[in-house]
Amino acid sequence: MLRREKSQRGGKTVVVVSDFATHFSVAELETFARRAKQACGCGGTVAGREIELQGDDPAGVRRFFEAEGFRVDGVR
Image 1 (cartoon, rainbow, N blue to C red):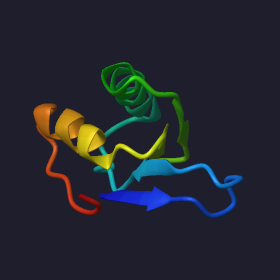
Image 2: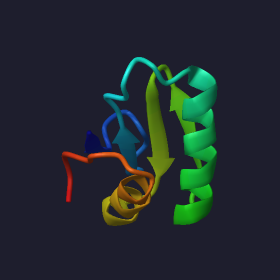
Image 3: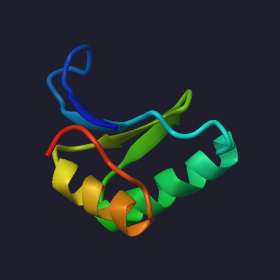
C-alpha cells in the first residue's frame, strides 16, 4: 500500500510503502528500501515495517515495486 504523507514533516512530502507480508524480515525491508532509493534517486528510511521515501514520486515508487513483483495499492 502506498500513501503520501506531509503532516508532521515540516512541509516535506514522503511516500510511505506499508503492509508488507509478515514473512519479510526487517533486513529484507532495508534491502528493498536501499534499492528503491537508488531506483527513484531519493533518500529514505525504514520505520518499523514501513519504508518512507523522500519526495513526491509515487508513480516511480509504484513502478519499482511492481517490477519487483509486488501488488501495489494506494496513491497513483
